[in-house]
Image (tube, rainbow, N blue to C red; front, side, top):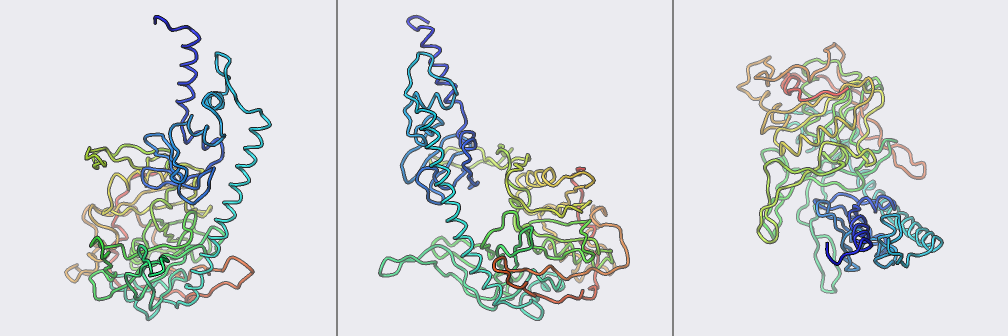
Length: 477
């Protein structure tokens, strides 16, 4: 190339090498942790703090801090984090000085001091976040303590209306009146507070950590006058019907232990994202007389907590969405390869058979990727992992309700049409045990909360409905 020296070419290659470093890679090298939020990874800014003001657009590979008004590629990131100039940032990213001998990179002592300052600020932010989480945890633990077992309450009627007998689970409770908040309102003094859209009865489910301590609440608002028993809550601004379920506290890495293994050894585990899904399969297996003494039914609350974060996003094969300029863009979804450094629901180590329940009424490709990710995530030596799918367009509660319909012939396995029997473990004579683990308070040695009956209920009569109502879509050793 005329007029271009070899030194100039070497310099251009050096800058290109620095620019090619991934923003997330550089943040990871510095120990900056972000969480997924749609197409972005968000969290506190490594420089100015906050809670979610800092974001990285995963596909574009660029970052932005809303508070500082700064953003860009990896070079701009290092300039921002280190207070460095362009050449010093490139030297940090490549690990080599500029080929022409320029550069005003900080001394190793200065870089070490900046790194120590960043670590101190990160530790301070984490301590503040932990204080906030503990305040929130204690607040919702008070709500849990002020509730009651579901026996004889609208929560039991809600489950019964969906074909599910009361599991007498200590993970489930009922509160007669609880506010459903959405968005904010502002009073005449300019103070903002949560906007209450609905008040009413609610079924509460305790989210516990691997240590068995209370972490959060899953809440389902009930309206027994509606077909499926859930309240209809409408956003007055948009007319959108909002989900009648919410979660508060911490769910990542936790779970709702709906029915533990009566023997204390959960050798078979059914896991999925929905309470009704897990309890529908449990009810069908109980009705079928399956021996469940070594079987646990554990709810992850959502697919993200069941499978954990993905290593990367992949392009959806068909779905597209319009961007701000009206251009149709392909949708990206979390892929099938798990990020083992991210938190997810834990499976008991003694489990040798794990059945992952997948709803057939969820977006198929997104759900399949989550299930494949969960299969890889929870695979272990000596453990078989299977994915059991409800029929297309249905969840397992739909299958159970069809099996219990009046026109269903007595003794018929409601999903025999094309379903396979490999969902159910080997049958036996022992009844299911339905006591659940206590949900102890975490701090201060507070006694464990007693939240339900210890005894197992009688087995409900009815068809095996869901016991055979899923087809096997995968297996991993």
